[in-house]
Length: 344
Ligand SMILES: [Zn+2]
Image 1 (cartoon, rainbow, N blue to C red):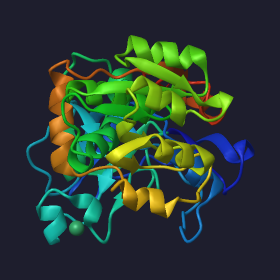
Image 2 (tube, rainbow, N blue to C red):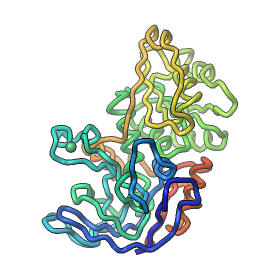
Image 3 (cartoon, rainbow, N blue to C red):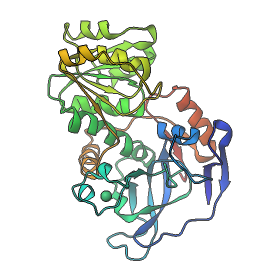
């Protein structure tokens, strides 16, 4: 099968287009014919290598797969070859108390498709059958691939953790990213008012077209005063953060009294100083969030099926041009998701 792999950890030079043997689904597994697979920042982290994380090479990245069932392993019931599916990106044991309650991210064996296990930058992907989800044909495979990990991540941040209420102000950092475009729509769906923060005026304008009421450009430096001004001096009740570094500090400064900042990433820096006094005097909460659980995925997928949340596709590349697609994401040129079309 055609595949794109990382030969070792490194920069763009380790990405190579190749052929691999077609995997065989084992007991409880399914083989999915990948129609489309979306990119995530995780793909760049895996390419670079993360401390303490061992990834077997060559590695097939890719966490968001839309396709159809190609074959089923022994013992798999309730599915038929040819059925259109999405693959839930969270991998877990399925048996521990956390898994049984639908919160698989708390499983001691939690992993993400394409992180340590081979993912969807290939014609076929071998996945646990319990990760299969039916998808309608109201969206194309490319559009569906732009949904699962991204919308799930933003849903957990805004709904489960921040408990965003109607009328609250939500500041969405990195508004043009996959998580950003999902967060804007989810915040609006929850009745909140959105301020989109991005590094370019063009992206802020696109975010407004998606439902943001106001925008700030953080390329020009301090933006917390601007957020205060927009919110009538109050600050943002909720911040969706994934940029890290000095932007994290500024995002925290934008937070209202009793506000909640939820972070799921650190694309521009893994450490940031916190003004502890300001944090406790203003009774603010900083929450860490890592993707989301199965139950949350069901909630968010139903909203997509109902047309209440819509994937935003920035660009589509053929599988063989994955290195170019990754470079576009690395340069932050995208607004919305970059998707690889594997078999049109
Ligand atoms: Zn478990």
